Amino acid sequence: MKKRIVYLTLLALTLWPLAHIGLAMQYGLSPWKLCGWGMYATPRLGTLGMEVFYRDAGADQMRQLTAPETDERTAANAFLERHRWLGALARPAQLAETVLRARPHTEALKIVVFRPVLERDSGMIVMTTTEWEYPR
Image (cartoon, rainbow, N blue to C red; front, side, top):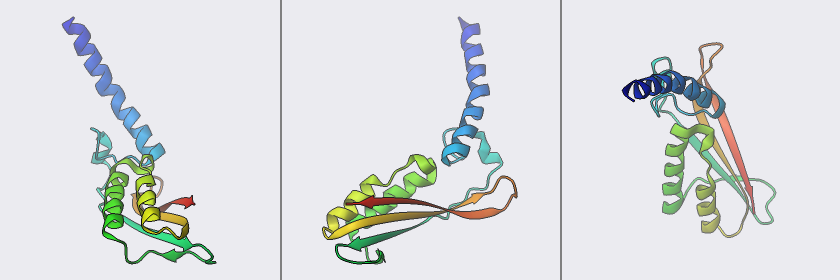
């Protein structure tokens, strides 16, 4: 029984880094979380930015949300923190719901997240963007 536990533990310690690397590459999962060993090869980039655009009913163009309400700011901060660690697995549905509830005349919403990543091929840090659109 003890041998089996030791073998299973060694197997898990061998396979988890491979699975974690796949998750980090596919979904942008942070190599610094979930016992990922990629943190030893990736700088911890704390910079993360977001812009929210909305279009009111009857308007032609999207406008940037520059003065968010307290609830909107709280939801944005919570989403950014989830996105920092979970990458593409984090979805801004709660943020979108909060913004749409606070602005009943909004016809469409676009959320853009800016995130620096270490480009694997060049070794350069580049800014990537991820966008979500929510029509009403």
